[in-house]
Image: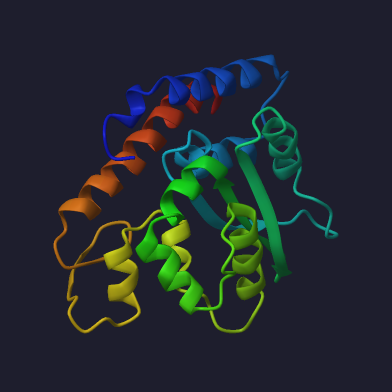
Length: 205
């Protein structure tokens, strides 16, 4: 995930597909464009997941931008979202890219850590997303979500208080220990989002 991902053919095809889809729409919902900006790096498979709180239309009806995305996501089995809970006029939504998320979670260290928190012994992306959603619906926030969001394992461990890892800076998230991998990861997310922003920027006005 850290090496020239924006030159990857799959990423290029995803960007092209987004462009074709948007250009066929007769008009653009302003919030849809905003959502595409926020989740752009996940939609092209660079960032495995994104967690957002999205306003619900008055009267509790579905957000139209979410419905537009639901239709778009049918084009690609990798891109999905799960509505988690509604509160105070907003719905919490987890957007994720299945292949990218699988790559983020399937290391031995990550799986050992997650299983220690009660995640299923039998690993599958959807099974682990199901378990995360269950935990997101509880009172205590599941800080292991950092792994799902693509943060380096060391930063997740540091955040939950591993004594050997010291906070060195904040750059997108709290970074602990050697910052080389974290910086590279953050830069890949930023570059992907920039590519999507360049794609949708002519449609903002």
